[in-house]
Amino acid sequence: MKVSNDLRDHWESLLLPVFPDGTDFNIAANASDFRAEVRWKVGTDPDRPNKMSKTIYIVVEVETAHDYENKTDAQRKADDGKLRDFVVSKLANHDPDHDTPKAAPPPTVEWIAGSSVLNS
Image (tube, rainbow, N blue to C red; front, side, top):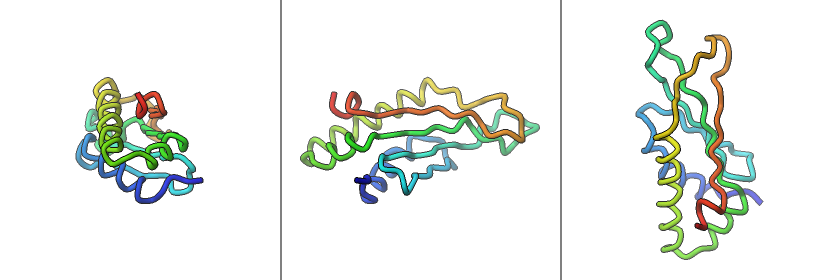
């Protein structure tokens, strides 16, 4: 069973504002879990003004997402704060820059928000 589109939209609206302006935030439509691909222009290389950051995959496992959907409004609001705090904390320790050659895709990192994040 997939994560609902309403939940995907909700989490996108919750998480997108924590990233730099102009961030590409794409949600995998066919994934059973919530999987967002996030990247932005790093602006650190004058020879590559359009150089993109490392690609971040934010994943909320399907079971965790379904548990979230079955909670009360108050519990979901608390979990929203936990998810946002998790991403903010990861972002604060994230170095988006890289030395990957221009013709190669940027490196990727995966941030998994499982039950240890949302049910703690």
